[in-house]
Image (cartoon, rainbow, N blue to C red; front, top):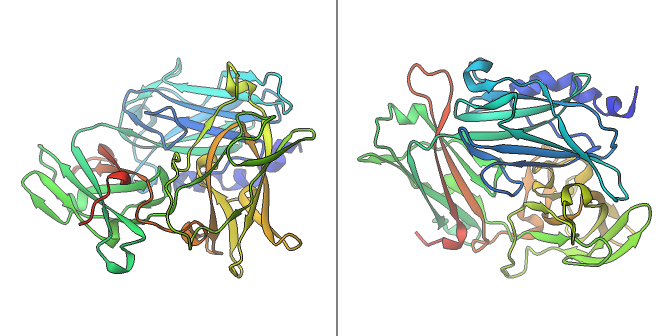
Length: 416
């Protein structure tokens, strides 16, 4: 059994139930830098309007020009597969080989860069709004990884405002999302048929999904919850910039060259007990770039990046991980920081493609729950992006369609 098949044994065993439940499949170690882009150019949660373009790119660092295939499935609000047939939500067909790829150029780490754009010759576009999942398979039909995205038809207006928490206990630490859905057409039984998704910094894993309209004024549905619609403010993300492989840049303390470039980041400490300090970030996102490269997608190096954290609190049987959109907000072996008793620090070495990255240190419990503020702190002043998606299933319909989207940023936060 070759290397790739060995790494895929577990995912192949559990692929079918995971897909039916809408569970993310994390890419194997040789698949790197998955970027899924919709309305914006950054590698964030892909939101597209029905009929618009979206793109998926990734690298295979084995670099053997393997064949990869994609499938697209339509899902309900709760990420169970919808009852729609393929032809009802897809114009064209999927289960098609990704034909466009390029090999790396002048890099120490060989890799193949794959690019999928939709619409294309085979998959001409999406017909329905709602939740979607794209799944990438290898030639043998083994599932490699999945990514979620949403297609939107803007049928209703969504106005979003960010407020400080009203509860005194949380007023200095949390941000509450208030929003109003404005519909000129009749929405039948909104408490039953209307659902909302509230997302902080494009991270679906921390989304709020169980809000019902509190009351109605004319054609407006009002959502003015407090703790029920609140997120921990967190802190501004830490960052490093590896666009220059041979020279230290933002967040990088020193550089070595072995078989690959090695970047050692500055040792960080807990920020939880310090006053809030504004530091511009891109809210957990990342951008691939290389200094003076004409095409960073294939010219960028892969760099071993060394993290170090000095943290003196007793975490018991919990773990410390790095966290961000660089791997779709996933916690896995590649993000786990091990304790070095000689230096009294937590360390991690992980391979990153050259670029600008946001990240944070989080404490992860054995049940998988993530405490984003234990090390970084929580502050009501923190700048965060918020997105509200509105889903509706009218009587007799067979799927949840997305009929509206609203966005806001906490730089405009106000007291209640």
